Amino acid sequence: MSSISEAGVVAAVDKELFIGGKWVPAAGGKTFPVLDPSTGEALCEVADASPADGVGALDAAVAAQADWANVAPRERGEILRRAYELLIKRADELALLMTLEMGKPLAESKGEITYAAEFFRWFAEEAVRIDGGYAVAPNGTGRFLVTKQPVGPCLLITPWNFPMAMGTRKIGPAVAAGCTMIIKPAAQTPLSMLALAAILAEAGLPEGVLNVLTTSDSGGVMEPLIRDGRARKLSFTGSTGVGRKLLEQCADKVLRTSMELGGNAPFLVFEDADLDAAVEGAMTAKMRNIGEACTAANRFYVQRGIVDEFSRRLTERMEALPMGRGTEEGVVVGPLIDEAAVEKVSSLVSDATGRGARVLTGGSTVDGPGNFYQATVLTDVPKDARLASEEIFGPVAPITPFDSEDEAIAAANDTEFGLVSYVYTSDLKRALRVSERLEAGMIGLNQGLVSNPAAPFGGIKQSGLGREGGTVGIDEFLETKYIAVAL
Ligand code: NAP
Image 1: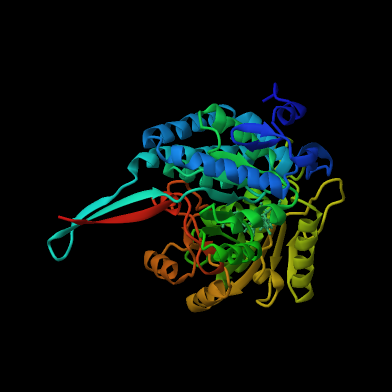
Image 2: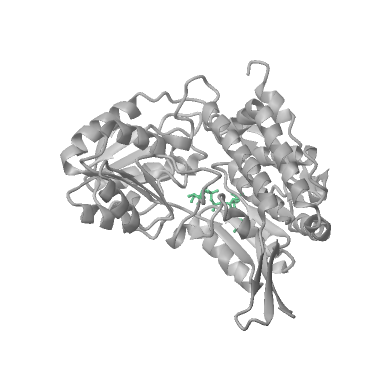
């Protein structure tokens, strides 16, 4: 690591738009700054795409689609495999770049690079397993041929919290399926995606298959592309509010959609749980990504007999977490993404304490520079506190006691979200009973981390539509065609 400098990794990134396999400036040479959330200072400027640049990217994706769909699945898979290997080889540089633009500690950034790369490895393997069918029609005379084809040019939009993995989770299956694409990373973290585009080009991805638009005007650039009709799919990861708006826009031309939206994960701890494991899992589910994860435990419901002991142990662990710039050795609590995020966390904590919650540790912002908020544990959090229904997206663990299993499940399900729920219990029957009753697309059963490229990731209710990863992930980028055969 010592040979890698901060300035060096930023300087190494191409900061123009990537369209039709070429790096090109935005119309009029416009740029916008990328800030380091731990200092508030600009790291560099990147190209600021206009709606016209967006149309140029769509033209390139549309032009490349037919040839790309005809590239052999094995070759598509091998491009992904080469990109996987390059990501792993350059993990240290890429991790530093990610920490600089997003703030998370270096070890977590490195973990994300590996996680991101694994999507390429997984979909390299899936590219050659796209299946079909041949069947005798019920009347015995006809035959059914079923085949799968790429959806067509796709629009991909990703958030700032996992700047690389949220991209590979879409690009991997799109490449494997034979789709071309335009990806628009969040304005706050464009550098990881630009670095990824260069790696894919180096791995042999043909011109026009992947196009990258960085812009400070996400709505202005993407809405015309959604309404254009030539792109056939939108895959979005981000907040439920923006997701709703994009679904409305997609309705116009009936685009296929995949929506990975917000979460409000409950974390249930029953009296029969292994308490050491529950505290460990709570730390992972809460503090991964400084709490800025859609999967972050947002509400802790702990059975009354163990709530004091659980709270004491969690508080001890949270108090001990070193805070600082993500590049510093040993730091666990990095900065939040921006000032607005700190203000939101502060206002949710004030609201909870105003309604009777008690602060066991933390509970304050930290003087700048940088957007820091203390690792916080709140107890006796009333059910009507805002943070019981809103995503905190920060390092705050609110604890509420419960008495019965039914009460815990009702509280856990009392949300418009349904991404993930965590359950800690040593009773197998309870574990399965509760898992089945929880309204969530994913359950962490005695574990605080569910993300895995080989598993179907996604939510129900207002947490989204569709699944990413696993054997179903590629289906989001394929259309099923049935050919009725008369014999
Ligand atoms: P966001 O504000 O919804 O933004 C997500 C992406 O959408 C960004 O690239 C953003 O670009 C873009 N965007 C915003 N408004 C848009 C518009 N009108 N048209 C087109 N694009 C638009 O979410 P965020 O704050 O970046 O991310 C945090 C949210 O993502 C949380 O709610 C979290 O739970 C969710 N998330 C979900 C998952 C999942 O898998 N379910 C994973 C990670 C995160 P700009 O920022 O440049 O405007």
